[in-house]
Image 1 (cartoon, rainbow, N blue to C red):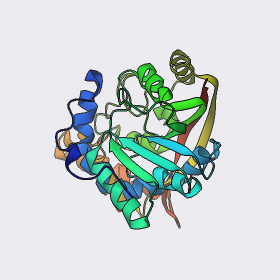
Image 2 (image 1 turned 120 degrees about the vertical axis):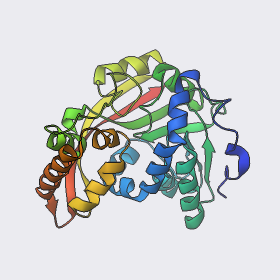
Image 3 (image 1 turned 90 degrees about the horizontal axis):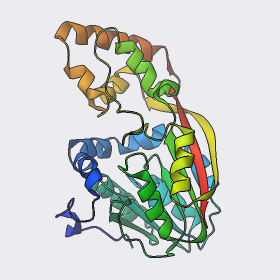
Length: 296
């Protein structure tokens, strides 16, 4: 049975959110969260080549108990449940709108061993030793204190439990953003993706910082491996432009500058995307770290 739905989220955020994560909680439960929920199917398609790397990185069994951190719309949660068919999978996320998508998905597919909970994994009280392993597909880059977060997550896993997650490498390596940004750069100010190390999509882009954070959180056997995969951005350039105009990290660029500059930027973006349009849609590359570690 899919649990965690209903009115229990109504008073959240508030208690149970780390002070440094309050801004993230507001964003993921406001317009940004509703945008990601609306585009959940697109994002699953964009990331579908990354997901098998993540699942293969853990010793999943039929009876595994698994924590999915920043589960979003629940695709990784339900894909994990396909393997852990006699176990249990808990998906946690800050975003109520995305958890609504996840719950609908799991209910429609009849996943009895899947549950969801709205929680800040940095401070949530996980049951001690409740999980064999934990995973995340691009959901761990937003903590104000990642060392504390990974330490807290580790406390919920059994001795020797494994962790695996995907996080983005540097913006310059990720064509799915750098290519559109380069197209509009002559006409509009580039979006602010945050200071290095600050909560945001590229906070763990530095492999050395990942190792430092996980070591500080009590992990060993840390491995950081580069993974590069194509990403389907949309059906055609117009579809991708519509998506880009709403993308939280990019939308501010299209609201600044005069209308003539915006018109030129959109024309340049359209031309650039057309160069990457093929039989499978508009394809751009993604560059991630696949990180694995053990909590003794």
